[in-house]
Structure formats: structure tokens, C-alpha cells
Image (cartoon, rainbow, N blue to C red; front, top):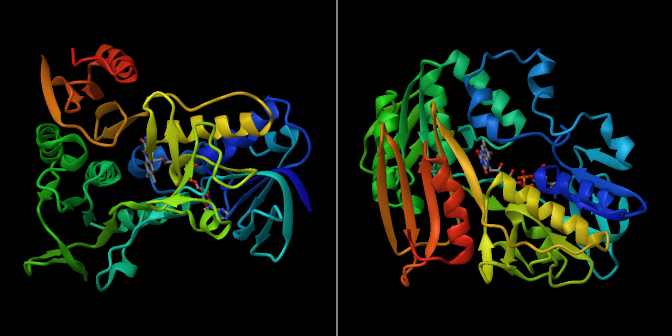
Length: 389
Ligand SMILES: Cc1cc2nc3c(=O)[nH]c(=O)nc-3n(C[C@H](O)[C@H](O)[C@H](O)COP(=O)(O)OP(=O)(O)OC[C@H]3O[C@@H](n4cnc5c(N)ncnc54)[C@H](O)[C@@H]3O)c2cc1C
């Protein structure tokens, strides 16, 4: 078959690309191929409300409530979904994709929105642990949590912290294990990491920082020999962008992501990449950024779809996201590729703002808890490379 726009992926970047292409009067067939069995859905609740909620696999409302758009609207928009199918080969010169069914699809333009997949630790027993990326993963985790009394969560990034707090809210005894001294320390600095640690401990999560997992066996065994027993183990040890198809197609891949310009064009003609898999040039930052945020995936997807339809758009937004750890919300807007200084300002009642600056004192990020004004203002200061306030 032939698609004027072929979108590979079933996440926010993929759906935004297909929708924006139509919104900008892109004509011809639009085909979205996803190896997930479910039409595009929200991932952020999977470590938050969905994980805290009752386990009722027979309740279709539960999963339907996560859909980004009702299934029946796809035909109305002229978007064809092929679910549960993997694109296994991409020939950029012949503009042809091969599917796991053996079908071939020729395309006018192709948007690669293959996102990322959980990285499994390379230790004995890791294959038996649970991960959290897809709705199917979340259903399996919630069902395991219903039967469990204790859990070990490995990895102190946002998903690990959120999932640990949610499992604890379900009443499980939870230990959060990570290499960092404090959760989120590498990304946000020790001052903020210590605050996140305080929240998790106040909620009853046991923290084991500066720890390496040597094996998954009835819980985990640490490199120092300590055994932490648990009924379930969740690996939240980072993700790997899925850029293999771009490499196969001969497009430039940098640090495992597809190198694209601010219009999301890859280095081979008629190929775009958006979302977690992209290493996109941000016009305001003046450099390429690796971003793993929901909102950015949507923004990038929309830009790729717009440009593929002949419209004009470029990625220049400051990446931002919110995280919910238990009942506390963090809001973060930053280029996300490092900082030299951090200054934390307390506002009373637990509210705070962390300001991040580069070597030259320019604002490169802001993180807030119960301080929305600073979050809004911070994103502008980052965009303008203004001095720290
Ligand atoms: C539990 C959880 C909570 C999160 N919470 C937040 C949050 O609070 N805030 C935030 O900003 N971000 C959050 N994120 C991150 C956010 O979900 C991702 O940044 C976002 O989903 C990336 O979107 P994407 O479209 O690039 O890729 P993905 O959402 O990863 O989608 C990729 C899609 O491509 C499909 N695919 C991959 N390879 C192929 C192939 N070869 N053929 C066909 N299909 C393929 C996959 O099945 C999938 O459907 C969270 C993520 C998780 C897992």
C-alpha cells in the first residue's frame, strides 16, 4: 500500500504528527503503525493514578479513560491505524517500510516516533522483574501489586519515585534502590534530591541510595551482599530510545537518538523524527537536546506533521514537565542538558523554587513545588537566557 504520510509509533509524538498533518491540509492516506495493541493513550497516569487505583482488569472504562482520542475519531480524520504491528525495515532511498506482517508500505513522508523502551539491568534475574512503559506493563504491575505485600523499585528517576510513592499508597512496604545518594540528584542536584528523599521517607518509602543491584532474586541482592526481600521488583532503571530504524535507513544517529533539525527533519530526505527518539535542534537553545517529556513529544510530533504537510513550524519551546510524587507536584522547565549552579529559594509551607544556571550565570532551568508563578516566569527566563533572578 501507499501512504502519503507514514507514522511509525503509537505514542503522543505519533498521534500529534498524524493530526497536525491533517490539520494543515496534508492530503492522501495517513497510516499510523504501532506495535502496541492499544490506540495511542496517556502514559503519565500509569505510574500515578492508574497504579494507585483499584485493580479491575475487566473494567474497560479504566483503559478507555486513558485513550488520547476515542477510537472512532481516527476514520473521521482519515487516519488509518495498524496496531500490534512492528515496522522491521526502513528503506529511505526507496521510501518503503516493511512491516512484521511482511506487508510493504511506500510513503511520501515518514515520521519516526518510536519513543523509548525500558532499559533492563544486566544482572541475573532481571528478566523476571517488572517494567513500566506500556498499558500492558501497568496492568501487570497493578495486578502484581494487588497480590503483593512488599516491593522493591530499582531506579530513582521520576518514574521510579512516582511508582514507589504509588505502590506505598496502595499499602505495600516499598524500598527504593538507586545508585544516586538522593533520588533525582543527578538531574536536579543534591539540594532538591534531599527534599524528594524527605517526601518519600515521610510517605513511608525506605530509601537505599548509593546502592548497586547485583541480582534480582525474591527481591534484590545488592553488590555489597545485602538482600532486600520483596514480593515484586519493578525496574525503573532508565529508558533506551528506539532509533534502530533510523540507523537502518542511513540517517544520522547521535548517542542513540535520531539527529534532526528544528523542523524535525532527519539527515535523509522525507524522514522526520519526533519525541523521545529525536535528538532535535532547539532553535531557542541553539543546540540539539535529548528530551523525554510527554508535552515535548506532542509538540515535536505536531511540528513534524505540520512541516510534512507543507506548513512552517520549528521547535523552539523550553521543554517542561510535571511530576507527581505521592500528593506533591514538581514542575520543571529546563534545557535539561546540565547546569553549573543551583539556588534553592524557600517560600514557606514547604513550597520552593530551585533555579539552575550555567557557568555564565544564565538561567537554564527552574523547578518548582507549589510556586507556579516562578514556573511560568522561569520558562521565559530560560528561553531568554536571562541572568538568574
Ligand atoms: C509510567 C510513565 C510515566 C510518565 N510520566 C510522565 C510525566 O508525568 N510527564 C512527562 O512529561 N513525561 C512522562 N513520561 C514520559 C513520556 O511518557 C514520554 O516522554 C513520551 O511517551 C514519549 O512519547 P513518544 O511518542 O516519543 O514515544 P512513546 O510514548 O514511547 O511511543 C512510542 C511508540 O512507538 C511504538 N513503536 C516503537 N517501535 C516501533 C516499531 N518498530 N514499529 C511500530 N511501532 C513501534 C511503541 O509501541 C509506542 O507506541 C512518563 C513515561 C512513563 C512510562
